[in-house]
Amino acid sequence: MSEPAKGTTVLAVENDASFWDDHDTLRRCLGEPIPRIPPWFGYDERGSELFESITGLPTYYLTRAERGLLERHADEIADVVGGSHLAELGSGSAKKTRLLLSACARRRHTVYFPIDVSREMLDFSARALTTAVPGLTVTGLWGRYEAGLTWLHDNVAAPLVVAFLGSNLGNTTPGERAALLARISSALRPGDGFLVSADLLKPAETFETCYNDPPHHSAFAEFRLNHLTHLNRRFGANFDIEHFRPHAWYDHRDEVVVGHLTATEDQVISLPGLGITTQLRTGDSINVGFSAKFDRDRFVAEIAAHGLRAEAQWIDPTWRYGIFLFRRG
Ligand SMILES: C[S@@+](CC[C@H](N)C(=O)[O-])C[C@H]1O[C@@H](n2cnc3c(N)ncnc32)[C@H](O)[C@@H]1O
Image (tube, rainbow, N blue to C red):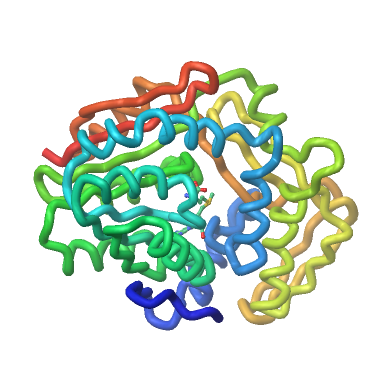
């Protein structure tokens, strides 16, 4: 594992990466009517690399839409959000965030707290940002969102902005989203900001083109299959990735793009590390990703219900993709 750059720190906010050993959550998710693998299991070292490849696919518009908004509006956003401490949930490579951090650091010395389960991405982003952005201090928080938010609440007294970019808030079920928004709201103090992006509703075809590999590319397929490879390695499972078909489709009723691995033959799966054996029939699926899509007004109302007041928004009319600023009342 590479060391963080001089002048940067990465703190473990969950004991010894215990999120990889959260057997209870994994057992519960795998026991759902359509078995599900919790999102963070997709981001071991290989999964994080594959997600970066997805962001470069010609059909994956989310990263381009968000980068475009930040290129156009980073100065204005930096003025409006204020504060010198900015945290980011699920920061990944933080390549887009750099635009905002540069604008913030031009105005005032800024401390950035990326929060991520990927130690490799935290080390990479801390190194890259410290080199590229003068006037920026980076303290990475290695762990899940909840542990990062608790650490911030206990350790940062200065006015804080928590960012949640990449439309990552959508990578949750509605129940998980409500619980996470409650945690975010309670980690903030009156006057703190919440900067969150959302992919807005558009035709199913646009979503399905975006979330499946275009011809001659395989980043999405490899990313989805890597969930199984990860479970094989960590829990001694026997998933045979040759017998799963990765694909994504848009569920109109629930307004969510669902990523599935569908069994192409009957199989008995055992995960000795979890004490689980389960049977999959041909056509059965495992859910390896939710990406909720949002109606703008309902999105704002959903967040406002957690004591966060809508303050500003920046929307790209082409891709119907928005960045929204809320303020803790
Ligand atoms: C879809 S990627 C987005 C990365 C980046 N925000 C972007 O827009 O390109 C999701 C990121 O969140 C991290 N992540 C997923 N679930 C997490 C959790 N529960 N706690 C902390 N990090 C998580 C992953 O490791 C990954 O870096």
